[in-house]
Amino acid sequence: MTDTVLSLHQVTQRYGKLTALDAVDLAIPAGAIYGFLGPNGAGKTTAIRCAMGLLRPQAGRIEIGGHDLTRNRRQALASVGAVIETPALFPNLTGRENLDVTRRMLGIAPALIDRALELVDMREAADRRVGQYSLGMKQRMGLARALLAEPKLLILDEPTNGLDPAGIRDMRSLIRALPERTGATIFMSSHLLSEIEQLATHVGLLQHGRVLFDGTLDALSRQQTPRLIITAAPVAQAEQVLRSAGFADPIHEGERLILTDPGAITPERAASFNAALHEAGCRVSELRLERADLETTFMTLTGHTGDAA
Amino acid sequence: MINVLIAEATKLRRSLVLLVAATPPVMVFALGVLIVASGNAPPEWTMHTMAGAAIWAFFLLPMSVIGLTALIAQLEHGPDTWSHTLALPVPRWQIFLAKALVALGLMAVVSLAVAFASWASALVGLQLGDDVVIAGRFDPMLALRLYGWMFVAGLLVMAIQWTLAMRFRSFAAPVSVGIGGTFVAVAATSAEKGLYFPWLMPVNVLASDDGRSDMAIMMGGIGGLIVFGLAIIWLSRRDWG
Image 1 (cartoon, one colour):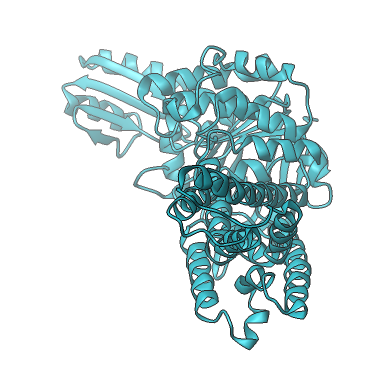
Image 2: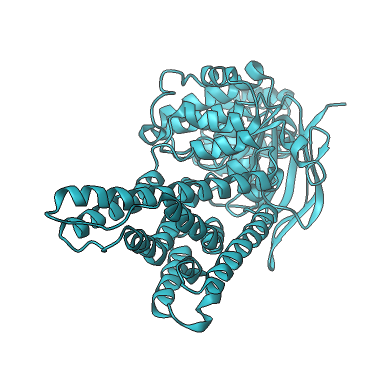
């Protein structure tokens, strides 16, 4: 059985008549990079604030490292580092002083400051005032502060928000390397589906305060029906071949034909279609089996047509 | 707790809080020098000490409390570091108690600095003015007693301003209440019921009636400690979402 670092059990949070979290169950396994997705207002930040003990849910239970957050707040939060929303640092202090403030409050050894700075590659800029940092540097310093106490769980709320493409790439590399370098489990929310797809091993989907999916990325992609995409000319003749093979309604998408019948879409059937099309004199320029990407899966599950933030 | 206190004090480094804290003694010094050097000095040292204390109690103390508590709170409100600070595995009451102690410590230092500035301004003014004389001798114990009791009597105002500054992200609430309180205090200085008005308690320390002075010190001090205590409990327990 996989150890669970963070778990939410039937967590409900209401703001007046609005239910931000509706009996949310989540389980973040140890060693995972857990991507937390949901449209705007889905309740992601509320869930993170509950997990950090900043909000007390009206119902349900949260456990971190086996400690109940309500009954045992200090022990539960002792194994957590977090960057919530913007990297909130004291701009009048240097990076090192910012870390030192947190270090003193946590009562940990000064040597851990240099270790944390090393992890995020910020040693050289550590003695400059944070007010002079770029957003990317602030993100790194926020991450260093979250890593200061060698947490078992790292919570990152939109860690690439506002960064330029190079900054996003750097931050992504940094996050990807963290589980191996620190042993921390990562729980991150992001509005960038591609980012979650590239980084995460596990995914949680939230909409209207309810969990639509909680599991591995593979399990999520398996929920989607594979599609066979065929580009062949002449397209009418190719369609005729497919109809004679039993597909009444292949989908037309320009010069492409798309088959979505779940029972028929196997690699073996794809190969037999290819042979049949060749025999019928069709010129096949593309024939591939495609599983839906995370965005398509997300849109399907949420019934959403806009941004997936 | 000591570590939390040091951490809270560290947050003041290079901040506007220190600049604002330096303003009252500088102003008292500058004003004192001008008054004494221009020949308008009070005839006795006791009166000079009382005059400096009155300026402090009426205007500068409440204004300093508004500015310092608001700026100390803005150190967290401004960059929105509450989420980080309050998610640390540290008892929240310790964090808020440390913040309160930092604010009180700073006000105590400013009070002492103003007392010193008042004395120093007279010395410099006497050097600069022609034939200016202040009779008698400076009584440091009188100055310490006055400013010390004013600090105690001002605890209730400090607690009210600190609580508002911590609770509200915007400057508007604490500044409005502070300006309003100071205005009412000036307008109702000699009102009988003014004894119970928090912003008048430091002023009442100067009252010639010992009963009024003692009552102001007791109500301001005890009331301040109670409000600080309740505010720390409330701020520690509320949701920060």
